[in-house]
View (cartoon, rainbow, N blue to C red):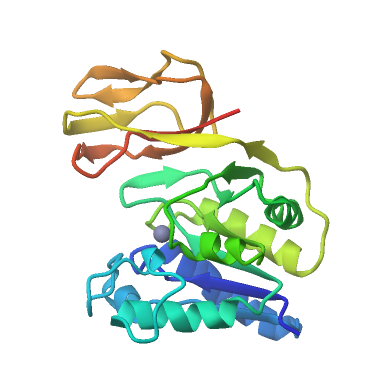
Length: 254
Ligand SMILES: [Zn+2]
């Protein structure tokens, strides 16, 4: 009986997910819950050095599914994980928001597939966001094979206790079969960046509704405003904003 597979550490720098998975694994053993498997450090070499990609081949594991048994180390790992994952009733892949950012916990999946909507309602985090996403991600490739699956973005890459506690509590409730409260569904979301780098200070926290034109934060004392009406999923935290790789915010639209 293979009911639920919970993964973390696909991206080695997203330690929050690894912390939740380790906690859950011990809790599941203690409770004697059957049919649930947890793998807290999928990409072990990357987790050890806390880098997103594997140090063996510098590949992003979550762009390598369904994998290749004759490929690189990451493609082989992806293949092995995929072969195991496809036999479960559902798969939850724990990630966190990018370095220097913080988000409200949310479920990310292809909501055009009814079985994923159903899984979101059973898991019951407050927010679920639609993505067709970048292909070769685990949850999308599994969804294409009709295996209900999702990513949970569990907060910031750093260990942010409040968000991790929320996700941990919700997942324990799910595994015990508790009925959750309602879920807010969002049809799309977008990343929002600006071209200049500099000191950034957000004024709107994740989990806030914003209007178009509302100030999100200040870049070197210049106000940065929201391009849309929406719900702020995640923000760049206070510190240096690097226009090459950071985003000011990700905003979901109702
Ligand atoms: Zn990730």
